[in-house]
Image (cartoon, rainbow, N blue to C red; front, side, top):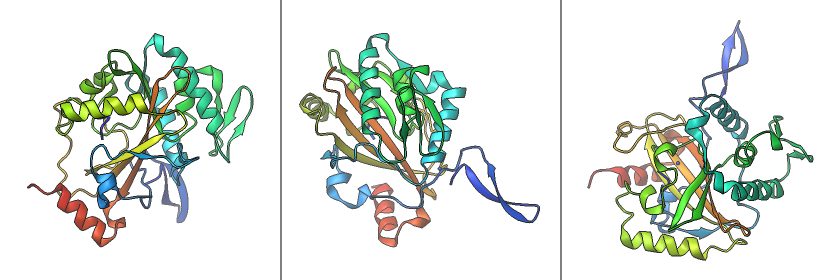
Length: 283
């Protein structure tokens, strides 16, 4: 769901008595540690938990950039209908998003007029695909566009790493419909979020976070409404999403970005594990 997140695709295996690298099935792409633990502080644990993004930190890159990007490229090539959707009338917002992403690319990218070489060495032809697909192939975040209709509605997205929801069900829905299965998203919360979307300033992106326990570290976790995810008792992984909101100045659309971290619970310290277990225990 939008409200509120795998070891690398290059795993080390012994081959003929030596250590080598073999491509696995993308199912274990994990960071070694979290840059923040949202359940440990009230300001990030509560809903909506919105905070300003520090200058220059709208888009982030971490140690599994190459692995996550390879997985995204794979999903776009093999499951395009499931991970990419766009209303025809969102074209101007999609193009504006691509131009903003290109302007924000930092060190490690080789940018020319027609293509970008990512830090992992992969070349992306900018005009060869839809603008939002090109943008999502450059950065680690999944990218979703919400435009104001009767309310802000999801009009375009590249969502390769869903945390137990599907793009198919949420596409074209407004904020209330998107969050229909979120118990905490009541009428008061809907009003607050709606006002916040209207008030976002293009020059000041916002961020929040969520956290979920999973038995399976796979980044691609689509589930339809009513479909239960795996039991989390004895789960071995915490999935954290850093979710950003940025308003596009020309179209007025809001870009929802999701940077996903999956970390083994054994990599948390004792206090972090105890608090996480407490919050997920039945009350």
